[in-house]
Length: 265
Image 1 (spheres, rainbow, N blue to C red):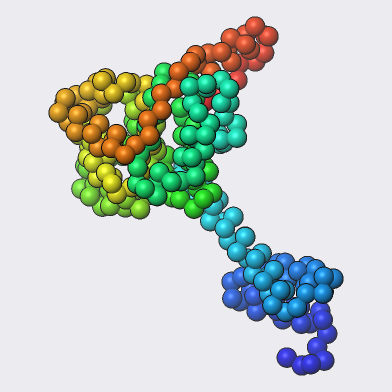
Image 2: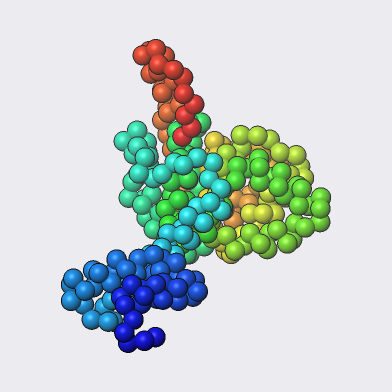
């Protein structure tokens, strides 16, 4: 590069180099960061640090967005939107501790029990989204969808490969366990799924059933006992009490003659 190159020519060449090196954030912000460095009288290393910071921040945002997409959350529910005043049986400090990811790093489980409409799915999605932002790989499935996926994989003789693939998921969220009865084969495959993740990677489960009623899902008492032994080992159990948020919202809208909007919590 000639020493007499104009600033605009140097900027264009630098942008070209950064693009070739696949550093798009640095290429896009290079000129602005250079002006900021010059105005602040920063040296070359400080300028380079600022520029690299732009690239790192952009990559972190892109990776977080990709993890959120791969998690396949059914609704964009966030933890900030969760009303802890209405869910008085849930301690905010305990939920925030879960959202820190400590239980996932320790390969522990999280079980949320409670009736319909009390906010179980919202809570699971909210914590799951925060964990995606923290760099954890999360996957969401309803229990019914998970069983169907396991049945199909078993039929196509790829179940071992699928279970091995899922071990790389740091937290697997299984929602609405107990709402729909499963066939004996489906229940056995679901047991196999949970057993395969035991002390390997974490699961988070929501259910409308007390532990004593899990035989309604798995049919066999000994299999149910073995499953609960695995699930509750080193786990956090939350019991959510109260009236259905959906029912209260529907009654409020009817009283105010408002359109009935579909709300899921």
